[in-house]
Length: 584
Image (cartoon, rainbow, N blue to C red; front, side):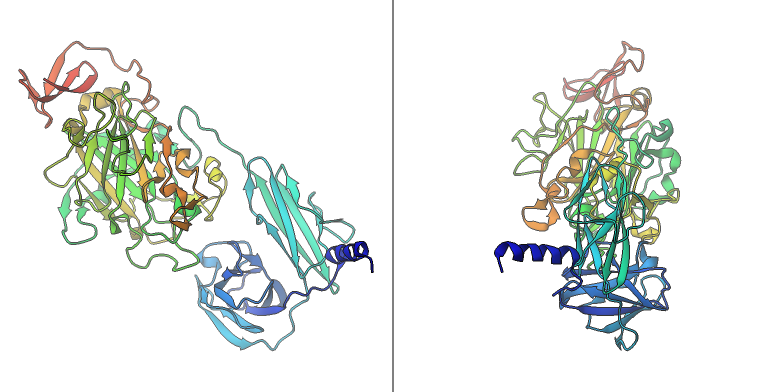
C-alpha cells in the first residue's frame, strides 16, 4: 500500500472510526444517596481533570459510569460531584488513591459525604459512548477571543454546532481547533456503536470594567462606598499581650468596634496570587475590607482578612489554625497618603525596598508618602513607620524617617468575621484568569465556605503625632490608606485593587513551580488609596483646594503636645492645612 494511501486511511479513522485502541478502564457510581440530576467526576495526579471535572454517563436507574482515557493506576485521589453545580453540598469527600476497575463507588449523601467502594459491579454494562473533552474547559470566559480544541475518547468523529441547534450526524465534523470571538454554546455529538452522546460547552465573552481615576469600581469592588470616609470618633481598642503564643497580641474588642458606617473600602475574597497558583500554601493572607475612624489623638484602622483559599485537591480546608495570618512570621504592609504634595516609592537609601535585602519588590507610585511594616504576629519584631527623607528615600538610622510607635501594644488580631458582614464575594473557582476581577461575572457568595470564626480581623491605633497629622487636618483634607497582602518578598494582593499584584500570578515562582511568581516580582502600584476624612473623591496625588488657607503656624511634639515656644529638636509643624515634620 502506498504511503499516501496509508495516511489517508489514518485520517478517515480519526474522523469516522468507531473503535479505539485506548485501554478501557471503567468504574461505576451509585447515585441513590446523592440524587444528583447528572453526575461528574474529578480526579488528580496522573491522569487528571481540571476542576470541576467531567460529566460521566448514565447507565440505568441510579447507576452511572466513567471510562478513563488511560489506566488510572497513579491517581492520588478522586471524588464524585454534581455535573454542573459546585460547592460542598454538591460533591462527595475525597477518595484517596486509585480506583479499582469495574468497581462501583457510592456517595453517602449530604455535604461532602464519604465515598465507599461497594465492590465489583454486577449490573448492566456501561454504555459504549465516546466522551468529548474541551480545552480550555467549558465555562471559560475570555476577553477578545478563545480557541477551543476537542478530543474524543474513544476516538470517533465529533459533530458540532455553534448556533444553539442540536447537532446531528449531518452537522459539521470537527477537524481543527475552533476560535470564538463572542459568547458561544458549543454543542457536540459523538456516536459509537450506535450509542449517541450529546454534550454542551459554554464560552462567555467578558464584559470588562475599566478603572476610572485610579479606582476599580464594580458590583463587588467599592472604594469609599456611598461617599463614606470613616467616622470621626474614638474607637475603644484594647490590646492584650499573650507571649509565647502564635497570635502574641489580641485585639480584645475588635469584632464589636466596627460597623458598616466605618467601611472605607470593600474588596473581594480569592483575589490573591495563591488563588491562581499555589493553593497549598498556608497561611492565607487575603484582605477583604478596610474600616477607619479618627479622633483628636489617634487614627484607628480595622482590616478584615478572609479564609476562602484552600487546598481543594489536597488537605482541604484547615481544621486547625494553620491558615491564619498570625501563624507565620510574615509581613503586613500599610501604605498611607498623608500629604497630597508628597510621594514616596518605598525605597531605602541602599536602593532596596523596605525590608527587602536583595532588590525592589513593592514600589509605590500612587501618592503613598508613608509606609508601615509590621509582623503578622502582633508584638513580634520592630514595626516602623517609614517616611522619605530629603532625598526621597527612607533611612533606618534617621529617627525622622524610621519612626517607632513605642509603648503599649497598638495593634492586634481577633478570630472571626465582623457581625456587619453578611456576604463574602469572590470568584466561584480557583485558577481563574485574573481579568475576571475586572468584571461582574463569576462571583458567588462564599459566606458559608467556612464557619465565621475561621476568618481573622486586625486593628491598629496610630497616634496622629507619629503620622504627622491632626484631627482637623484629616477632617478637612482626608488621608489615604491601602493594605498590601504579602507572601514571600512581593505582594500577592491588596485592598483597594491594583492590577500590578496579578501581572505574574499564573507564572511559576523560581523556587517552586507550584507557587506563583507574584511572591518575587516587582509590583509598581498605581491605584489610588481609600480615603479617611475629607472628601472621598479627593486624589492623593493631586492637591486640591480643600480648605481655605490659614496663616496660623503651630508646633507639636512627636507625642502630639502643642509647644508655644519650641527649642531645638524634631517637631510637627502646622501652617494652615499643611502639616510637615521639621527639625529646628
